[in-house]
Image (cartoon, rainbow, N blue to C red; front, side, top):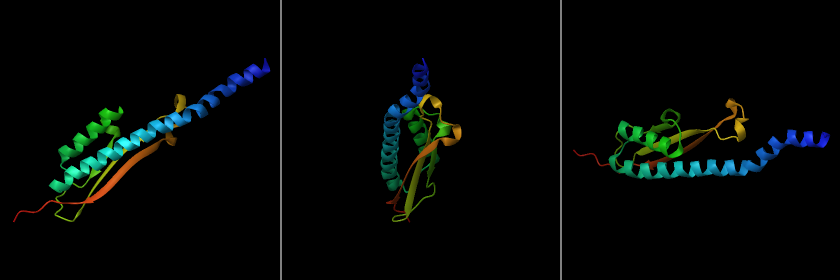
Length: 127
């Protein structure tokens, strides 16, 4: 009886350790998705020379819908002023990761997945 009780008490820890690689793969897939979105969006913004507020809102909604987050949890920071040819344009997208086995992890222990990239603007200012 004692050994059965010990097994029952240790079972959640066993499941936690056995499912941790799966949870890490989900977070890695989210990270790769963010990296792809940042890279693709920055390539389009290089031509314009900046990100408009509509572009930023669209990115925020796109990431939120694709990854299943509320739009308010997705943070998008980008260059919103016109940058002429050769000046840097940056884009940073961050999402919280709340993936834990049975949510046993305290709320203060959540990490943030952030992807950021900088590229040179290709916009030519018309005189």
